[in-house]
Image 1 (cartoon, rainbow, N blue to C red):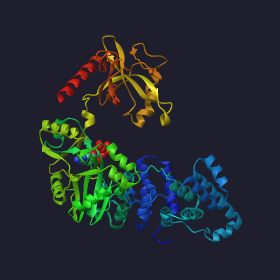
Image 2: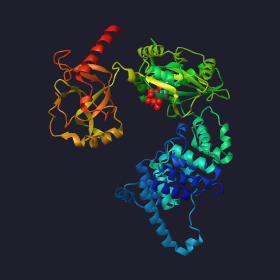
Image 3: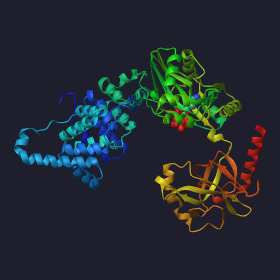
Image 4: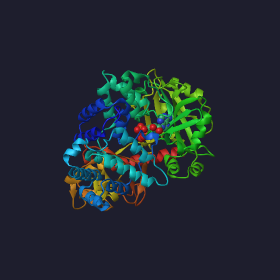
Length: 606
Ligand code: ATP
């Protein structure tokens, strides 16, 4: 082992300890201990191993390509047992990592009894001790083994690694390969641990985090900290080819409040409904990174071309939204259109079928200059100065305003032209680019919140339907009703099955258990047969695309048209309104008024 390495056994033991705790503070303590004993030259590898990766996602290191079957073969080969034994152990233990651990232990015992304890001690264990570099580099070779003979090579490399591994090491090597480390360590905990281990000051955490936000590669950041100290990170600048963590927006839907929050006056831009692209230019070389910092360059050869021609600077990092368009009319198309391109494999064909345009909204770096700490107006000026616009490569449509009415009119215009709403951005002196953070310097004001159906409604859950597939057997959809004070009954309006988070769905049984009854409640007026009926008790806030007429629902039945009630198109759950009694729900009369208002609006627009 070179002195600048660390035994892999230390990593395996650390993983074992990490698995046993869940509190972030405890995880941090364990990591600090590990980091402090890790030599600088391998700290990056240690960080990646903890993340369960061989590098940051955007580096596009190939998948390990070792499926369960291949892994079973490699384990059998390493411990010289038949595959059937590995499989049956797998069945009983339920985890291949534990299988490898068990077999490694048995192999160790066999070896000991053969050689005799004395001889083994004399030979110092008799095996080559695995180091972090050895494990990491071998796994890297496994990942990059491609083409003919790669299957055999992968098996050979993995089984070689396992036969050198101690039992605990084997367990975690196998889990790593399977992508099942589950240590519960997020990026934030790694940042905490680096700050404690090498920080030395209270500001260390924020300095390290800022550097990470500018260069989204924790391994590299860790290495700089360990080799040169936290202060060296102050010099970290955006680097072309390494993604910057994106700035995110808060949401709001009141123009007056939005303008107040950005300081009275803001830059208001169309909020395009496409995919965010962080576009890096390094001479002729272009990289595009997604919102989640994946390298998506290969999906957009047309955007690569636009960027190559459309950016005057030699080196630059700009951001924009990539949107599907109709090339004849230049009309914007919805996100679903763009998804069609992403699903296709033949990229050049997809490019012709789903043409795109790019609407640029920020410049983060230009020819050596880090712009992220400059106020937005200055960044925009830089952006405009380096862009050569074309039909499909332009700055996002915008206005600057301090007038809420003007903002609202612009919002309506944005929607009319196919945008999702607007982004309102602060333009005061402190309007920096907050990489990796969500804040009130950017506020999204989306169509959802001001759809045709301007107000949300509060409806009562009167029945439920069981889900299918993954959610089979569990309540996944609710039958919702409005209150009719004249008859003191609840009349159905819609079935709502979207808008619930996984947590909402998981809690559904628990929430409704006290209210389940074997038949429709006497105060419920429904033409639909639910799978399960409830006492009207739980009120939920619901939004939809618009109000419609439906023969299935009893709310205001016949009031607008014979045989039809009022319903909601594309209803979505927003939240429970436990502060409301069922009788406080939106009334059928209110819904009728809302429907009439909607009709008038449509007529006015026509
Ligand atoms: P978030 O990204 O805020 O977590 P999300 O993924 O649901 O939420 P949205 O709520 O649609 O995304 O809003 C943010 C996204 O809007 C940005 O990440 C960007 O892709 C897109 N966007 C469109 N137009 C603009 C614009 N003019 N300025 C900034 N972002 C824009």
